[in-house]
Amino acid sequence: MTFDKFLALSQTAMELGLINSLTVLSLFLSYSMLNVCDLSTDGCFTLGAAAGALVAIAGQPWLSLPAAMLAGALSGLVTALLQTRMGIQSLLAGIVVNTALYSVNMALTGNKATLSMNKVPTVFSMARDALKSTPFSSVSTLLVALFFVLLVGAFLCLFLKTRLGLAVRATGSNADMVRSSSINPAFTTTVGLCISNSFTALSGCLMAQQQKSFDINMGSGMVTVALASLLIGGVFFGKHRPIPLRVLGVVLGAFLFRLVYALALRLDMPAFMLKAVSSIIVILAISGPYLHSQLPVMRQHMRAARERRRDGC
Amino acid sequence: MLMLQNVRKVFHPGTADEKVALDHIDLHVQEGDFVSIIGANGAGKSTLFNAICGNFTLDSGSVRLAGREISALPPHVRSRDIGRLFQDPMRGSAPDMSIEENLALAAGSGKWMHRINARDRAAFRERLSLLGMGLEDRMRAPVGLLSGGQRQALTLLMATYHVPRVLLLDEHTAALDPGTAEKVLNLTREIVENNHITCLMITHNMQSALDLGNRTLMMNSGRIILDVSGRERQGLTVRDLTERFRELSGSALNNDRMLLGMT
Image 1 (tube, rainbow over the protein chains, first blue to last red):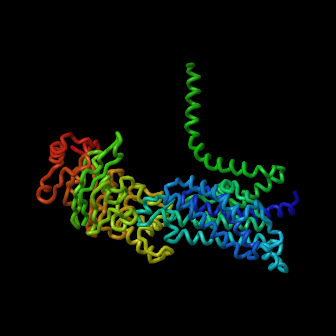
Image 2 (cartoon, one colour):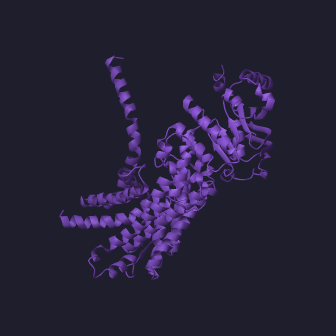
Image 3 (cartoon, each protein chain N blue to C red):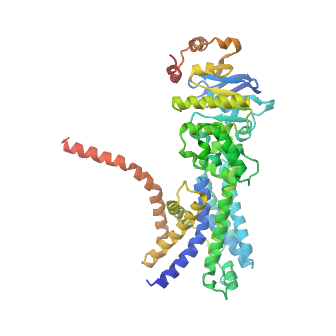
C-alpha cells in the first residue's frame, strides 16, 4: 500500500470514526456515566438518520440536525419513562423501544427501506461548496464531522461538571446518595437518556448525509460497535482521569476502531465481518479483567493437580 | 419534632414469610433530643429508620416532622429534612467522583447549571478541615480512594451540610476499626451538639447507648419495649439493660455483637 493510499484510507476512517464517535459519546454518557446499557441505540441511530434524511430531502439540510436530535431525545424520553416510571428493567426498556423504533422509522419514511439524497444538498455538500476555492476543500467532510464532535465533546465536558451533570454521574455511581441529596434519580436518568439519545440520532443523521443515502438497517449492531469503541477509548484514559481526557479517549477509540477495520478490509477481510469483530472486542474488553482476576485460581488448581499426580494418588 | 403515630408495617403479608416489622409504633422525639436505639437482630430498628425516610409505604399510621405529615412524600423529598448514615461507609458517597464533587451535590446550591467555583471550594475546604483528616488537601481525589473512616466522616459532613431537622445514624461506626470508630463518633457528637441537631442513633454498643444522648429506646419484635430518659436513665448500667430486656421481651438478647460488647 502506498503512503497516498494510506492517507486516503485514514481520512475516510477518520470521517466515519468522527461521525460514529458521536454515538460513542452518547454511550459514554449513558453507559459509563449513568450505568445504563441503552439497547435502543441501534433504532435511535436509524431514527436520527430517517428524520434527518426527510428534512434534508425537504430542502432544509441544516434544520435536519436539530430535527434528528429532537427525535432522538423523544426516543430517549420513552426509554427513560419505561424504566423509571413503569418498572421495566433498563435493558428490556431499551430492547422494547428498539423494536418499536423499526416501525416508527418505516412509518416516517412512508414504508420505504431506503432513501436517496443524491440529488439534494446535505450539510456535507453545502460545506464542500462553501469551501470550494479554499485549501480545505478536500477535507470539508472531515471538518464538518470534527466540528460536531468538538461541539458535543465540549458540551459533555461542561455539562458533566454542572450540578445536574454531577447528579447524572452520581446516579450511575450511587443512586442512594442522589436521593439523600434531595434529587430524584428518575429525573436524572431521564435527562441523561434524552441527551445521550439526541447525540445518537445526530450521529445517524450525519452518517446518512455523508453516505447520501438512508437504509432502514443502517443502525443494526451500532450499539456493539459503539461499545467496542468506548472500551478501546477506556484503554487510553481510564476511569479516574479527568472528564475532558476521557472524552478525548472515546473519540480516539472510535477513530482507532474504524482505522483497524479499514485496514482489515484492505487485507481482504469481507465487510460483513465488522460486526463479529466488534462483538469480539466487546467480549475481550469486558471479560479480560475478569479472566485476569481468575488467573491465580487457575494456577492454584493446576498446582494442586500437579501435586496430586506427583504424590501418585 | 418527629412524631410517629400507630405506625405499622408487615412484610410479605399472607405468606409463610409474613413478618410484622413495625407493630403499632408510637414515638415522639423532642427537638434537640439525642435518642440511642438498641435491640436484638431483626427487632425493627433499621425498619423504623426506613419508615421515617420513606423507603416503603406504611400499612397504617402517620409520620410527622416539624408538624408536617410526611408519610406520603417520596424519599428524595424527605431527605431535605432528614440526614441518614448507614453502617456501610460506601453507601453515602459516589466513589467515581471527587470529594469536592460529592460535597457539591450535598451542598446543592439550587441551580442545575451551577458549576463548582472558587467560593464553593473555599467553603468545602473550611468544612473539610473541621474533620481533621487532611481531606481538605485532597479535594480532587476520587472518593473511592478514601478509607472507610474517611468516607464515613465525609458522609457525615454531607448529611449535615445543610443542618437537617433529624439525623438518623444506623450503626454508622460499626464497620470501622475501634480507633476510627471513636474518632467518627466524636465528630458526630461535635457536629450534632454544635448545630443542635435532633438525632436518632442505632447502636449495638450498649455502653455508648447509655453514654451518648439523653434518651434510650429498646426495640423487640417491631415494638418499642423500653423508653428511658432523664433521671431514670442516669443510674442505668449495661447489666441493668440486659436484665430489663430479659424481663420485657421474655427471652435473652440474641444480638451477638451486642453480647460481645458486654463485659
